[in-house]
Amino acid sequence: MRTISTTAILLMLTLLTQAQVPDTLLAVRDASQNTRMSVHANGGLFVGGAYNSSPFPGLVAEGAGTRLLWYPEKAAFRAGDVTGTQWDDANIGWWSVAIGEDTRASGESSVAFGKRCVAAQVSSFAVGEQNTASGAASVALGYHAHTNARQGSFVFADRSTVDTLRAGVNHSANWRVSGGFRIFTSSNLSTGVTLQSGASVSNWGQSSAVISTSTGAMLSTGGVWQNASDVHRKHLFEDVQGEAILDKLRSIPIRRWGYLSEADDVRHLGPTAQDFYAAFGLGSDERSIGTVDADGVALAGVQALDVRTREQAAGIQKLEQENAVLRERLQALEQHVGRDRANMPVTMLLAAGVIGLCLLLVRRHKAISN
Image (tube, rainbow, N blue to C red):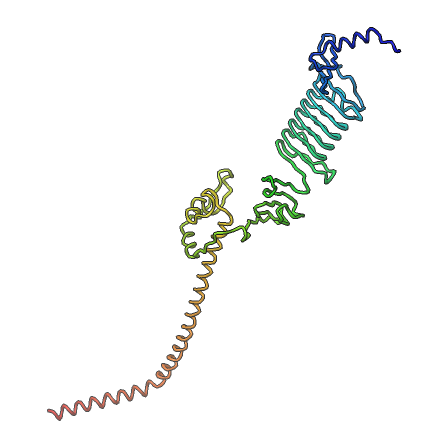
């Protein structure tokens, strides 16, 4: 039978009698009777300590190794495995957490999870594989993402390449998603927007699209915005009179102008939404002009002008035919007059002879009467 020393028995009795709550199975206290660790019947584990802004030399282990480490003087936690100095005192930030393989959280209140991730600045967050959050309050996620010392930046990189995606400016969101960026706005995934390279068909069945939407509108890989115009998406059709469209267009001021938010040398041309809405009543409000409405008005106006052009062409053709007939008649008259002019001397002599004979007869008649 193995002998148990008096000191061991007293220590066990001390641990049991110093429990703070009835469910405590084990409690460990320091010389000042402060509880440093306790194990509870429900499986709970408490490990305490005292924060110290100047903890040195408070770290119980450094260098490479596999361990679970609670560093109370810096209120920092480590778990996993490191092959170097990632968990040495100099690389442990106050109030930081690092879990995984070769992770380092050297910034205050920083967090690093995963494989070879680094959270180097205050309140930075790095999760995934080989990600670095080197800007204050920056986030690096995914694979080979780097916030590039840009504060307030967010970087997510997919695993399509080993190239590192870096933030370009402060306070920016940077994404590498070669398979597309999908935003769903309904629980059944029937509405939303897809941003992609255009190499594959989008969630909404559109091909060659850079921006694809569930509404049917899309931006093509050629840079053309295409509005939804499927007949199956439309109803309440009404015919319009082209001349009425032209009459309304005449009443709309078309002017050059600039947006208040743009520089003064940036100019645009067109109507205001208020004038357009007052004339045509198109769109959902009088503060914007839908491109389909502007295009529709323009096309209706073109059709009306085409009708005018066709009518004018028919009238011109009729006038040309009438002019041809008149030209033929004029030529015939000119020919007749020409012949009369050629015979004019003989005709004049005959007319003079007749007139002279008439005068002679008149004189003889007077003489006989007298």
